[in-house]
Image 1 (cartoon, rainbow over the protein chains, first blue to last red):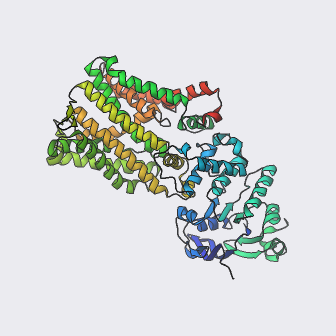
Image 2: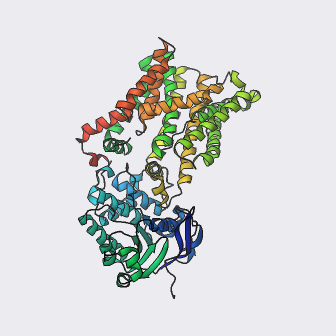
Image 3: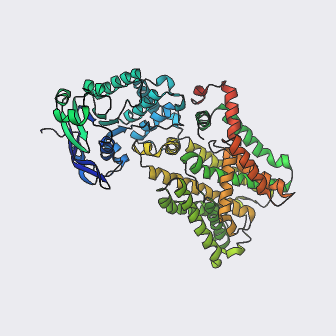
Length: 250
Length: 342
C-alpha cells in the first residue's frame, strides 16, 4: 500500500485464560475512512477496541498508529498520539457541569491542566472552544446544567463531545447508539457521519441498518477473528458472514 | 452521595456562588474579631486550635472531597510537621519561619515518597495503605527515643518571635498575638488551597474523583495528578503540624496515631466534604463539642459519634454543605443551571 494506514494491527492477540478473545487480527484503516467492526455479542469487538486504545495489553501482536508502534502504551499516551475513543457504557464526569466535562478535555489537549493558580473561568479560549463543541453535539443550551439533568441520548452525545474535544485524528466509537431511541439514533448517526467527513472513524454497532447505511467498509469479527472484510455490498453477499452472523437479518 | 438530588447539590457547592463570597467575608470578619468577642485567654486558645485544625481538615479534603481518595493516615503530616518544627527550633535554630518551612518541606518529601506507592491504589486499598504508612511512622516516633523522646514526647517547643532582626520583632508569647499570627498563616494557606481547587488542575482532580478512567482517556496520566494532590495535601497538613507544635509547646507520638487520623476524617465529614470550607466548619464543631462536653464528662466522642450518625442519615452533605445547598436554593429559586455558571 502506498500510504501508511492510520491504524494497523498486526497479528493482534489477547487471551483471557484459555479464551482467545482477539485472535491474530490483521486490520488496516486508511485515512479518512468510516469503518465498522461488527460481530455477535462476545465476538471480541470491545476487547479489540481496548487493545487499540491501551486499556488492555495484547498477549502478542502489535498496534500501529500512523506507522508508529503504540503497542502497550498506557491510555493517556495513546490519546496524546491522536486516538480518541468513546465507550459502550456512558463514561462521563457525572457531578461536573456539562461545560466542565468538555472543558476539561480541551484543557487537557492544550496542556493547561497543570495550571494550579489561575481560576478555570479565566481560560476563556478553552471555554469558548468547549462551547463550540457542545454546539456540535447539540448540548450548548445545557452547558451550565449538571449532567444529571441530561437524558440518556444527551449523555451519549456529551461523551462524544468529550472525545471530539481531544481533536483526535482517529476516533474509536464503541456502539455510539447503544440504548438510544429511534430519533436519538438517527441524530447521532448524522453526527457520526459529519465527524467522519474530516476524521478517520472506527465504530462498532449492533444496529445493522445503521452499519450498512453509513460505513465505507465493514470488518466482521467472529470468535475473535476477522472472517470477512469489504464494502457493505460485499459483506451483504458473503456466504460465510450470513452463516456466522447475519442470518436472515439482511 | 448517591442519587440525583444530592448530585445536583454537590455541583452547586463545587462551583461556588455568591452565597459563598458572602459567607467567606463573614467568616473572615468573625475570625478577625474573635479575640475581642471571647475576651478570654482560654477561648482564644481554643480558637487558635480550631484555625490549625481547619487547615488540617481542608488539606485532607483535597484528597477526600476533591480527588475522591479517602486517606486514613492524614495524622502522619500533623505529627511529622510537628516533630520537624520541634526538632529544628529546639536543636538547630529557634526561628518560626525556618520551623514552619521545615514542617512543610519534610511533609512534602514524605508525601512524595508515600504517594508513589499509595496513588497506584484506589478505594479501600488506598485507605489501608495510608493507614499502614502512618502507623509505621507512629512506631518510629514511639521507639526512636534519642530523637523524638519516645512516648514522653518533646517539651519546651518555643514560640520564636517574628520580625526583621535588628529592625523590629513581634513576640508571639501573648495568646492574642499568637492567634493573629496563626490566623494570617492559615488564611494565606487556605487561600492558596482555594486557588488550586478552582484552577484547571483542581477541576482535573474532581474529574478523577468522578471517573478516573475517563481522565486517563482524555490523555492525562491519572497517577501523576493523584500524586500531586497527595503532595499538596501532605504539605498543607505539614504546615498545620508545625503550627500545632509551636501552639502546644509539647508534642507526643499520639499526634501520629490512627485515631487522630480518624478525627480529621470526622471533621471533614461533619462539615461537608463537597464544600470547600466545610471541613473547616467541621473542625470548629468537633473541637467545640469536645471542649463543651469535656466539662461534663470524659466521653465526648460519644456525642460526636451520635451527631455523625444523625448527619450520615439526614444530611449526607455535611452541615455546611446542607446550609450552602439551602442558601443557594433560596437565592436562585431552585434553578440549578444558573448557579453552576458562577
